[in-house]
Length: 56
Image (cartoon, rainbow, N blue to C red; front, side, top):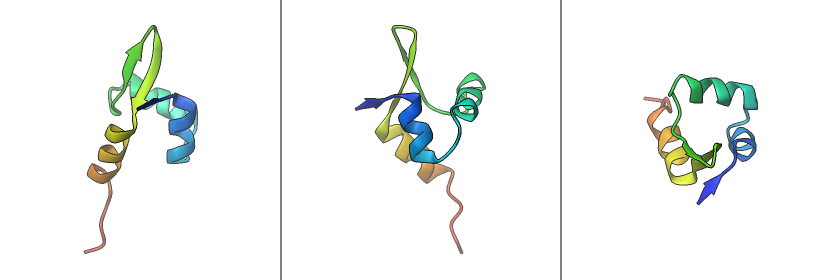
């Protein structure tokens, strides 16, 4: 399922402008459909897992 930038910013608890910056730098996975940014929930979860710091 694809979700909007507003939804992603709420999930990650970051501002939309931060997310736009990550997208611009290609630091965050996205899809562009009809000129609008969309994000895969599965890819977001994978991004979170890859970028998490675990307590060792």
